[in-house]
Amino acid sequence: MSDDGWDTAVAVLRVAAQLVDGIQEGLERRGFDDIRPAHGFAFVRISAGDATTADVAVHLGITKQAAGQLVDHLVTRGYVERRPDPRDARARLLVLTARGWACTAAAEEAAAETAERWKRRLGPSTYRHLATALGALVEPGRLRPTW
Amino acid sequence: MSDDGWDTAVAVLRVAAQLVDGIQEGLERRGFDDIRPAHGFAFVRISAGDATTADVAVHLGITKQAAGQLVDHLVTRGYVERRPDPRDARARLLVLTARGWACTAAAEEAAAETAERWKRRLGPSTYRHLATALGALVEPGRLRPTW
DNA sequence: CTCTACTAGACAAGCACCTTGTCCATATAG
DNA sequence: CTATATGGACAAGGTGCTTGTCTAGTAGAG
Image (cartoon, rainbow over all chains, first blue to last red; front, side):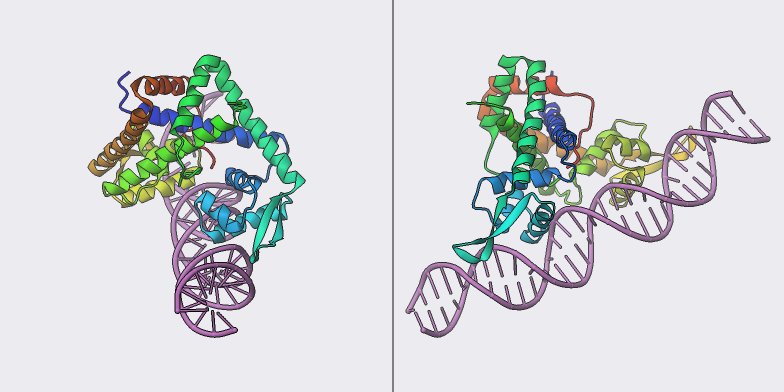
C-alpha cells in the first residue's frame, strides 16, 4: 500500500458520497422528498437558534440572496417560519416548525443508519478510532464544499 | 462522547469539504483555474483509458448530454482530445492531452498536500489507521454525491 | 442629535450546469 | 433484411447560484 494520499482522498470522497446519498435516501423513505442536502445544512444553523438569513448564508458559504431563496423554499414548504427580531427591526429570526424538527430528526436517523453500517463493517473498536480521528481533523470551515 | 453517528457524519462531511476545497485551491495555485471537481472526476475515468462520453456520463452519474457539454469544455480548454474509435464509427474515444495529464498530476499533488496536513495533525500511526478504515468502507458506487 | 458607515434583506437580470425530448448514424441480435 | 439498442449531437427549459442595486434600519463618532 503505497499511500501518497490519493487513495485516501478518493476514499474520503466515496465515504462522504455514501453518507450524503444515504441521508437523502433515508429522508425520501420517511416522506421528505422536497429536501436537498443544502437544506439540511441550513437546518443545522437554524436549529442552533438566533439565526437570520445572513447567518445561514455565511454557514453555507453562499450569498445572502441565494440563502434568501433557499429559506423561501423552506418557508413555503412549511419547515421554517420567519419571525420579527425584537432586537433588530430589519432582521427576521428563523425558527423551525414542527415539520422542520421532524425533518431534522429524520435526517439524524438516516445518518445514524449509515454510521451503523460503517460500524458493523469495521467493528466497534475500529469504528471508534475512525470517529475519533475524523473528529480531530475537523476545523472551523465550510461544511459544504464548492462542488 | 455519546456518538449517535451524527457527529461522525458531520466530521466526514467537513473533512471531505476540506479535501475538495484543498484540491480546488491547489489547482488554482498551479494555474488551473478553469477546472471544477466534476472535471477532475471525469479525468479519473478518461485517464483509465477506453473512455467515451457515455462512459463519463455513467461514471459521474449525469446524463450523456451533460457529459457531452462537460467534455466539450475540456476539449475547448485543451485538456482532452476526441479521436475516432476504430471499433465503433459512432463513438469518439477520449484521451488526455499533455495539459490534461499535467492537470491530473497537479490534482494528485494537491490532494497529497491535504493528506499530509492530516498526517501531521494525527501522527503517522493514527493516520494510517484512518486510511485503512476509510479504505475498508469504500464500496462501488458514486464518487460524487447528488449534492 | 446628526452624520456617516455598515448591515438585513428584497428585487432583478444573468450565467452555469443540468435536465428532458428529439433526431440521426451506426451497431448488433434474430 | 429487419428490429432494437446505442453514441452522440441539437434544442429548449429549469434550478440554483451569481452580481448589481436598492430601501430600511442599526450603530459608532463627534
